[in-house]
Image (tube, rainbow, N blue to C red; front, side, top):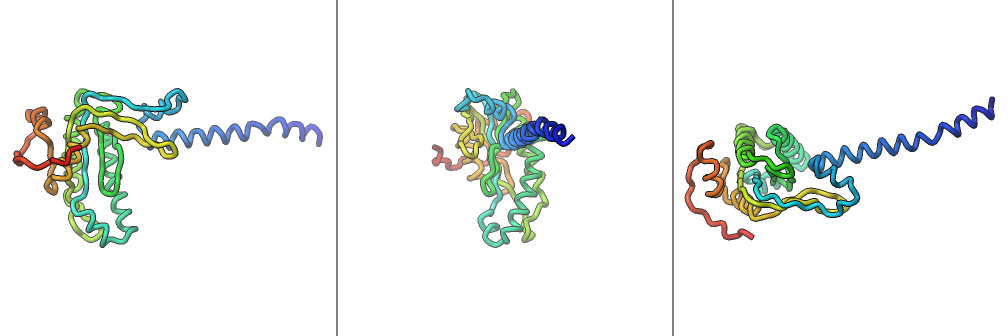
Length: 223
């Protein structure tokens, strides 16, 4: 019986590492899906795709940030600041998912969303405009750990972009193009609590959304 038991154990033992390998693979795929859009993550599994870069002739970009963030960061304990940003971004992420859009990245208090990438959609600009309104509404009445209001500056732009995956050790998607630069300038020159768009976006959305003319502003820093 001892010999039979030993042989049985030796035969049955190999599947265990395989099971652990499958579990590790599932965890890796789950992590990849959380970092990258599903269609991009699927392409990354293919060894033939060394470089992933696509051009989109028509897409929309949104940038949002918290007005006065630098001061908040300097006079708020780190743990409280991170807890506050985590709660805020969790709420914004839920809105992005609800509208079927893609968050590109966050950096400090800067929040970037793309519409029409990686899956093109004819209503990309309308969907992003609706998200912008929902984001502004979501922070209405919100206060930071010091009891101060949290107004957002939001900028939206539309046009051709290039999207790709960058980085080897820590891959992430990014988007480049004139529309990205314009959206960033719309946000940085915006008034607290407002959503600012360039004239071409106004022309595309004027029949479905209400706008208020601000007048000319200097956006010379476009690159």
